[in-house]
Length: 446
Image 1: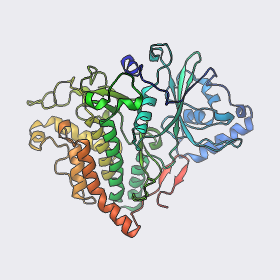
Image 2 (image 1 turned 90 degrees about the vertical axis):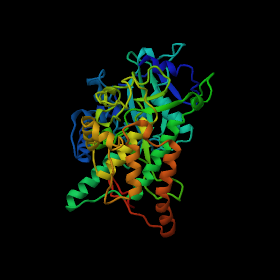
Image 3 (image 1 turned 120 degrees about the vertical axis):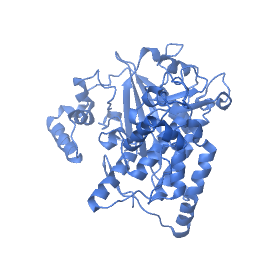
Image 4 (image 1 turned 120 degrees about the horizontal axis):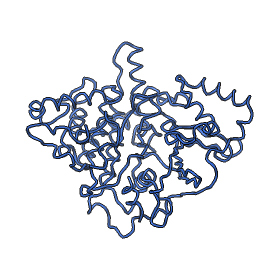
């Protein structure tokens, strides 16, 4: 882990506001002194949630409750912004409201600072979780969850807090779950509109292009040329819609506001969040992929990473290369396509594709016969052959068989164009079922 932070040591991070404070992050919020008010907020919290988690409840109500377990909060956080209580947790998007100042809405993530993260001058190094999404955003990628600022708590056990844009429409996992519920309610298959899937694919294609052609100068790197010549790219090693938990907690794809460009349909734009497992690397990096192989969620790992890079190692024809073979930017493309496939199949946790990976590894002959396609001849009665074929190509077992960024953008534009033309001509589009966002149901169809 040390090497990653050192790679950011020479970056000029003046564009990132990094405030420092010696204030105790566990300072008791004033309102918690009023026992009646605490009980009232507890009742309100429970009334708003269909599931119950005692620690989540304590966390969300006030950071004062964190005093019970201050050393185990690397996955939990809350703050008292401008003197008013904020509610939130990692992966669950929090609502911030103050009667004393301007109402705002933010999400907060907190994690421990490690001593080896300092730069050459002994100052806290900018975490990759802040630097990478901020750089991609400045590079023009509009599919990234926006980071407002970051704050360093210089206390006995130093901590980082990241303040992020709040997205109130829920997550991609919420959307899939809603359609699963709708199908069960009506006793028939109810599927996500293809128009939305094409537009979501366009968001993915944008992110894939920027991650593939990442420019180090967007980080203000000193003494280094534009990265394309050196083959630098960005990996996000944990692109998933959910992980078997309450859906709003663990999804790294958020549903943002509709695009401002009126040529697009008013569907929520996908936003990639949680860059804790983000990496800036290249095919020539000696640590790629040895350093990254265990990062991520197992059921969402592409073939080249699955089983600690051992997928296909027992085949007679080892087309995957050695276990230390470097990952490429197409690693992220596979995960993005897996999420598209999940939307089409209404599959959470990537269960279907993981089973197909196991089957493909067990039967080398048929895998080779099918051209190393994970979903050979994929067809779906609800979706066009063009969409199915593109998903199949992006889910190719061999990374080199997956589309290049420009090819993907071209094919996505071709698939999306008829949807946009129909919308421009008629002003109508197939509306989405509302998702169950954490702070109330957002009517995406309105």
